[in-house]
Image 1 (tube, rainbow, N blue to C red):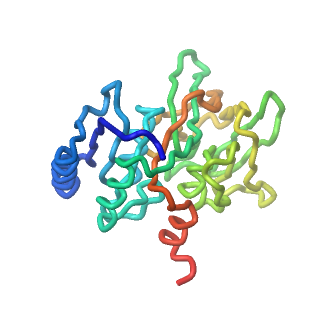
Image 2 (image 1 turned 90 degrees about the vertical axis):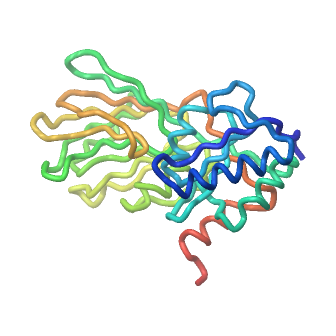
Length: 268
């Protein structure tokens, strides 16, 4: 049993009438139980309820590490937003009473270093992806781990994902499903030119550096499929484990395997 939650923020998927209406209902339900409704940026939050899907949850998790988040799926396939509308209030009731568990999830710190100077820092919960545009040819990408040369990839791109992100883009590219709390990171090539280029699992605390060798192709760095930047030849992307953690809350008794069975329709 955990301490009772006193203050909750409710975040709805932007431009979704269903999410907005559900958020209003959830806030009324919470107030009836004496719970304070706070702003998502408030310092004293005990929980953030995200209504929409994985995309909305990803953006909240990047901006509010260290605050427990519970995701409510409003219709689309989602691995992070596990709760359906049919179980929403039963799960929230259990969580408000302290009957819940919190999983720490790895966040990635991603630094883009432009060869011409300057750069930018990002954070990701699912993945950092270096990839070509639709019309570009395959790209040339050299990878080092902790300063040691690993491989030169000729591929459509390379995905560096957390265990949480192993069920996202990496899974579509042929990567394995990892238990989400494992202390590792995953490198999955996208359509590699050489079949011997396989996914690699490395320790969480590894420093992964990717240097773009392609000079004329249209290449991008994308974080969680939501933000990113154009890359040019010689640009370097350095990925490390963040000191901050995303916290995902679920009612006691639910497991990661329950979500996999439901989302992937295993056993049907």
